[in-house]
Length: 364
Image (cartoon, rainbow, N blue to C red):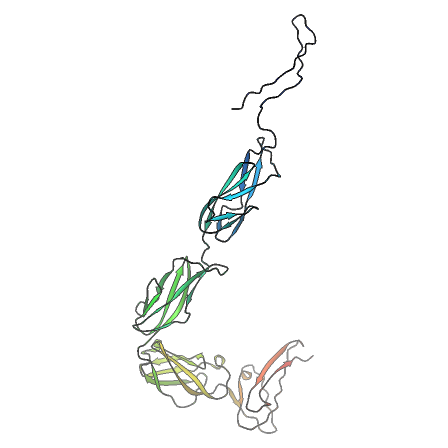
């Protein structure tokens, strides 16, 4: 309840008589309330009351007098009730330090205003497992690590990671990332944190490595077949993989002593001269290497004084001029309608002049 207002008057009698007195107020005073311009309320606002660790939040303090008039020009002092969670600088910029809650206070002329904020952890953006290409022998263990990371690459410590395996019969994994090899072959190991998952293809290797003892005779050609013989090979098609110069072949049959395969198509193989090619066998979770003769290029013969024109795109992919000691002139034509279009080709060979790379421009 407001206090009653008291007025002090200096009286002057202008005329007396017949019970009439005229009173004129000459001055006044008293304690009639808060003077205009005095701060009585402070409001603190922000775009949000929740921010992530590491983020900033601009606070605004608005202060008013008793008549609800917005004031300005006064000093605002900022403080935080919990600096371990959030701090605030002299400009009212709050910085989130750690998950939790804090009350941020603005003081103007002894009057306070507050805003409660919540600081949340940085969410997991992705999870990365290391090593990326793990392997373990059956009966042994390997420890994998999974690192949750924020959207801008922040390493997020203390996050819960859940591990799982795609095949318990091949490998198990505990919640510490320790993988135990059970039986040879491939298995996916996954790590998840806050809905984000990474996985690696882990290879369980046999206690006894596969050994290649022989290969099929003859020359391998794209789309043709081949055979590898040996010991401790994979027992079945799914237990064997064959790669020729890095390109995956199609395994058609497999046993512990023999693997049959189809050579990849020419478009999947690197263009190399006819000769030994690296053949990689992956069996029972382990690897073995051998070489087999491979012909990828189309062999061409150009007699002395004659020429050969190749225009089909497939014919241009990979060619080999048969014979030794020959000298050739190679001309490339570019039929692109735009003169700025350029195409490239590469010549390789034993003669210095033959080892070259060049470009052909469209006719201008």
